Image 1: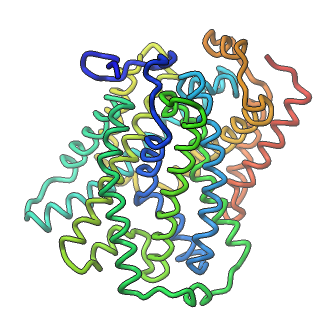
Image 2: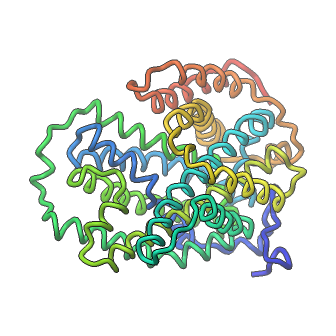
Length: 434
């Protein structure tokens, strides 16, 4: 493959990727998506379905996996424009929500979300790495220094670009799979899991759908960024298949391990509890290592897609400068562990914008445009003549406020997504836009 720069940094920002570089297969996308899936952050919802929702592990697993699969179908569908036109996801959003909403609202929200998760994942990984270094090597490294080194490495790999994402996830894959295999082996061999354990608690269907909704909401935001990866795909079919299969298989393992560990250990972090239960220190260290590599994988993705969102908001930066700026802010924020303690309020606030926007994007592409973007619409994207999508702006404003007003116990995420979809279609029928 021809390198886009002498220093091997990806240069393509908002411009289309040349056809000569569109060589990635479904297997490569499946590896990337799988590597992104199994991380400590993604274990949280499956585990909470057991520890707080009191669902049997099988019901909890089914709930979150069904919710995630529904989201992955939408995410994979929105990867198709990237493969067809070689453009990043945030740029293509201009065809769905209009240039104003895409650049002034959607991309900034995506930047904040990506930077926050980059920082939180780094903070969690730094604590684990600090503990490993202290326990196994008797060396104490200050948290801030270790966080800066860890975050800088991931930011650099994201700066290199898609080629680095592909190579790193491929290199990590064997360790991730072995680590997951060891985790399942410990659960099955030591706890002797049987099917009878799944019937110890009756299923409350309201709670079942609540956690299904949480899983759906957790991943549906990916619709705004999936094209960032698939712009290098050989074809739309290859990109779609790889993203869907990789995400589905990865979350299958995540949900299975997360619900089993929560059911039998009452823990929300399988990497920690299973490394402690391992038969030998070596196996425990290997499980911890797989957790760290999973964190690095997802964070490279956060930085890579987040920098494109920043670029869509501030096009004059260029790809390199936007990646550098995103990485710099991410490194600085990773030095403040207290950020992780504010997760609930921050996620809730960001969700008020993410959920309505995701619904608008999905409905506009799949329902209004029937999965097709015309040449005329592409010209409008490039020229910036999609100034204002009034139905999208109205829907976003109304439903964002509604999200903040609905009590959390009513699972506002799925409700707002469905309501936003319906309201947007109604507005499209009565309001004429460009």
